[in-house]
Length: 342
Image 1 (cartoon, helix red, strand yellow):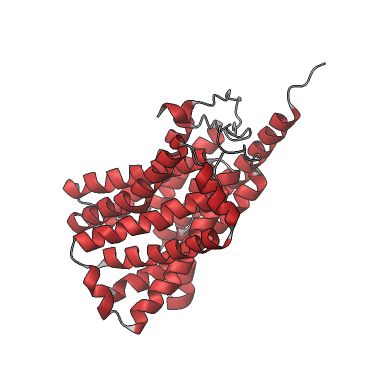
Image 2 (cartoon, one colour):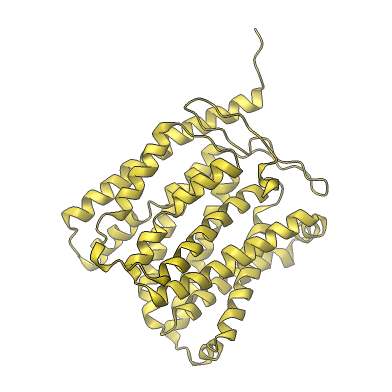
């Protein structure tokens, strides 16, 4: 995508170059203020917490459904409905939609198609063919794909400390996976494509947030995306099952939908203010929260292998949070002050 490469930012030695310190100029919409990396990193940390809670609650909610695709589509629809409310209330949101140019419309629709529906459908298909362990292994690499895409398309630049932390994070996430349960079958192809789509979706969102509001991005990703996902459920003949849901199932749909809303807001807010690489990598630290919830709620002991993996994850996330945040703040300040002359 040439449009994602339009803004060229020089790389700094052992430092991160924040690609959106100067917002992209779009003819039909006013330029947005540069993001605040400090705010972005805190949103990323909050996103990791929300994600950890979501994994725990979803692990219980999905068990009440015979069709996980319907469950996911419905909780996504809850978010889609929620983000449409501000559009109906605030005239400014409707005005922004009218001012969007052709490129923005196109990229927003791509976000809805990729991250809001198609990637989910491919992920579901992969899970049907392969095993949950295989899916977990493939999904663990998502933040690495985001880092690679961001370096190429958004010109995000990090020093070796961050790249080392990303590698440690992947190793930590992979600890405890039963290798003998991994199946290298055709399902891996679907899972890999879905993971790449989710990663690429984050890159497009990051680029769009230079000139488009968070609300508009969320409307397309979650409202239009969930509508497309519901269309997929209808096409597979599972939509009629909604009429047979019980109170417990509706409760999980509502609760997990609201948790997903919090996840969506924190992730997009993080992307608005900080680098895509850091935001997604910090969010990948969610297993720490999930494991703590399992330990306290179910009194389940942690194995030494799992504990070591969680320790690696924590070290990696703290490194990215401290080193990355400091360097992005420094880069943002340098960009605002301009070149110094002696």
